[in-house]
Image 1: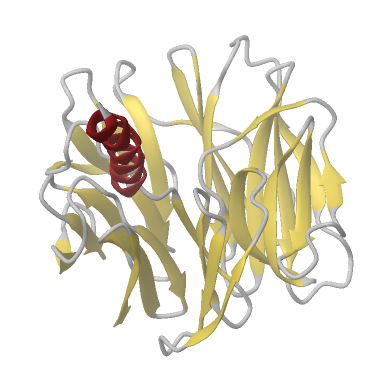
Image 2: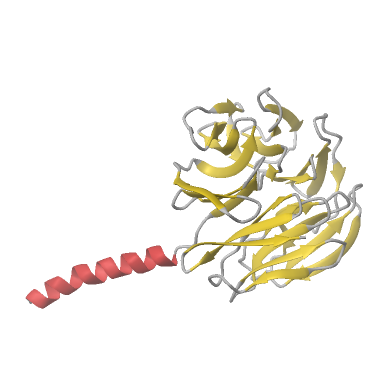
Length: 318
């Protein structure tokens, strides 16, 4: 009988360790004025790396809801949903935060992040979508702008990214999918419709100076990439060999969009520099069924991926 009583706690501890070890990391990435920032939202581990790949620092941070890494005029910063507000604060002093929004329901997917600017968007409880923009060189605080209202949808999808130093907001309400482009430090333009399959889920968007790539997934689990030009006309479509439950991450710079996903056995990153083309740059060094995150700093691409349950890194120059 005594042996049985010893076995029970050992089995419980082993099961807890196995479940925690199998838990995937919740990674996010962003570029700042001088560095790349990578955050695991599961553990709060934050790693900052120089463009040459040298690690600058590693710290533990208190992670707010749906936290993101951005570069603001206060340095490397975190952005997160703070109750019914959006909060922005330096990594070194998260308590010294700026707050935006009135009745924030949720942050939009993705965050724009470059050396000079950042952008984020959120949905208010009334369905309106707001964009937040800030610049690393500007002493003035970041500012929020209402860009879409009266959408007549209870829970519109939205994602924001950067096209060089401009912002691109993609959103769907009902059967309508639209894009709003906001030129660098200027007002946002009018929405334009974009032709995406209405039954597909939108996974994300990444842009260059010349085009954007949008990832969608059908009800059968087929992932498709759609290339559109600056007037939101479809240029090409191509299937992506991603698992039907794999996340897809996208980030663009002047000429390339990087696309992270899992093909099942391996995390993968492809790049595209013209409509319809894909070039693999990273395959197979991480845990199965995990999706890498990607970020650009000029012509340098850095990514973080899960390997043996921890964060691994890779760097490529174009």
